Length: 442
Image 1 (tube, one colour):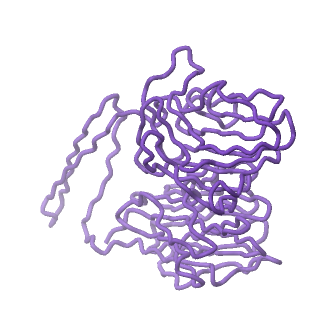
Image 2 (spheres, helix red, strand yellow):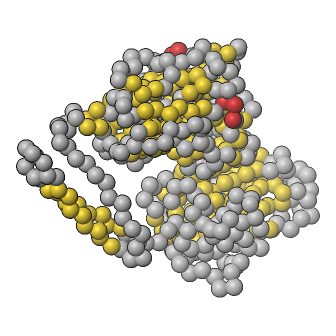
Image 3 (cartoon, rainbow, N blue to C red):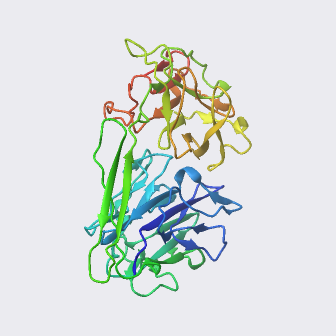
């Protein structure tokens, strides 16, 4: 008998309506409510997205901060799980696999490898929510010599804040631990530490899954191989034949092929904002407008403006930030100032939905494309919020009030080490200021 090929991990983030608390379920289903669940599994099919429950009233699934990874264990000895904790005052949030569409800094390096991990591999976080090293953990699981991957998703709850440990033990305190392991015995319950002080283990919100990696459909003599192709300059198909010779084998043969499709990358075209097109706003002024990022905006920072279509894909992000005591109005959308509220991100030309926007905090709205398959639009078209964003500027004069930023992780080169890496850089963010200071794009 052989092994199933993939361990698919869904790191499901459920965000509270009040207070912005994020809580992650990495495997299994919580006894407190079946809506809090993760579809983490072992399969011969690679996951292409996370599989998560919807949550429950008051704490729903947060799509831009839920993540996944399909770990190919074929020919690999270890599953290395990194349980990455990103902390802001009053809220800890764990990413157990993959990268959040909300921001690429929220990522976990969970992988399959022939080398056992000796530490966690995590993103740096973002803004006021950086990585917390003493509460990030890891475990290296030997899947070559063990049948089951037993994942314990351990929830440690303090007042108003839940925090999950998906593997290993936190250096902050040994009570914060998960018994996630590889074994020839299937787990029948979670194995978790007791927590510490005012943050004990929460039994009804801690979960587990025993993933059986054994594939009973494979008999003796089953041979499986993978093909790794070159990187051609044009679309090319590479055929490959295989055969097995041995006593009693019947000398079977097989063949397959890999087609490498060469096309554009999601950095085609120049996403951004028009240069020098905004006016100032008076201090305390209320404004309401949709926010749009444009394909090849004019005026352009380039001597010869780009005319190529612009590709959009998950990982790109439009961030709308209120600065220096500026705020979003309650009128933005019903309850829009509630962290976790969501609405659509649309294609400007026809209003079709291409992604979503969500309130990440009292001062930040993030919008991202949602399709796993990159798509494109023509120059002059753009991505726009489906509703106007109502904003109230700071009452201080000569002060930046709002900033719209376009993040494109596929664009190069990096610009000044500031994290803004749009292909051309100069027009990838746009600042509105109060009277006395000219509005500008930088």
